[in-house]
Amino acid sequence: MLLNPSRNYTRGLISGIAKYARLQSDWVFYRPLHYREPTPERSLVQILRELKPHGIFMREPEQMEKIIEMGIPTVSYPYTVELIPGVANVAADHIAIGQMAARHFLDRGFQHFAYNGFDDWWWSRRRREGFCEVVRQAGYEANIYELPPEERRTWDKELPAIGRWLRSLPLPVGLMACNDDRAELIIEACRAVGLSIPDQVAVVGVDNDPLVCELCSPPLSSVSLGLEKAGYESAALLDQMIRDRTVEPRTILIEPTHVETRLSTDTMAVSDQYVAASVRFIRDNIRRNISAKDVADSVLLSRRALEKRFRRILGKSILDEVRRMRVELVVRMLMDRHMKIHDIAEALGFPSTSHLSRYFRSQMGMSPIQYRQRNLA
Image (cartoon, rainbow, N blue to C red; front, side, top):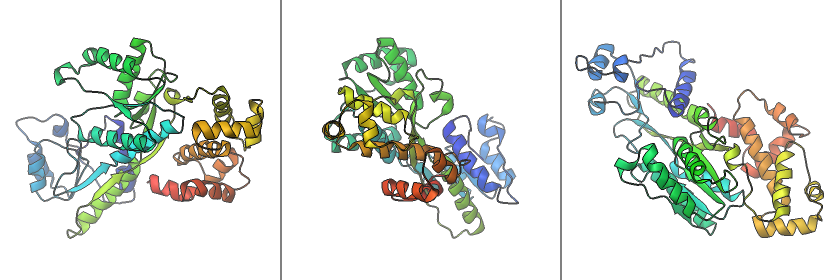
């Protein structure tokens, strides 16, 4: 196991690997200390030759090429390159991650968008491509942050540059950061230049690392990834490769599951006070089975008049927004494997699980059980 569990990304993968391993009676893991603290006296390749492992899980350790040459069935979770030849790979669908973040802002009525990431990291560029693609399809353009030279990328040196860039953006703006760490820097820069979050700058990150997201002020919304499922599938693949050497290595995609919404994007970027108040009412009462009339009554406007405002400003009906928010909540609940479908239906006021299933399928094209199976190990 040549994986460092210090980050949420890797811990999620390892969790899935461990879940698969519990189904096996003969799996034993070795995590060589020399992987984390190599010494010239004893290289990682030497350790592996002594251990004679049946399979390897690795990120991108030193002497990676020599490890691959050993011919041991291997699953890699690459970072600096898209795919590592000669082994099975597990890689995130970065285009889909960016697309999900863009839709998160579009659903909240944003018309101004921005992306802040790393030009010299391929995965950041892919996330930017997905984000900009959806924004462009909606008829808008995203403002892209220009990364300074590498010697000026320390936190204290880059913070002023990001602050100036943020000040140049049209407001309110929906801003995607390439990951949670980058989003934390954006939030700090907003505070430094006096921009409020989420009213002026709404920020979403990637990875949904609770240790980062919950310590941000305000707490950070983030695209959550199906890490545990990918880890589980990669362990199953390695098991096949160990048992049958004719099994070809393949690539497993880590799919984004949902945006875990916290205060950093908990806003509606519309100037119409009736629409903004209506969306707040829907959000505050989304666990109830509310109607379009309930929403209109809450803002003392006729349903017909409010429908016209929704169509003009958000491009959707009142009930479209109610359904979107309810399904978004169902998705978050489904990601908690301890919640039964029956409990979710009951918590949201559905008469039965079959009613919930039909409602969910009409929006997502699959049942709640299928969605859970698709995204959880």
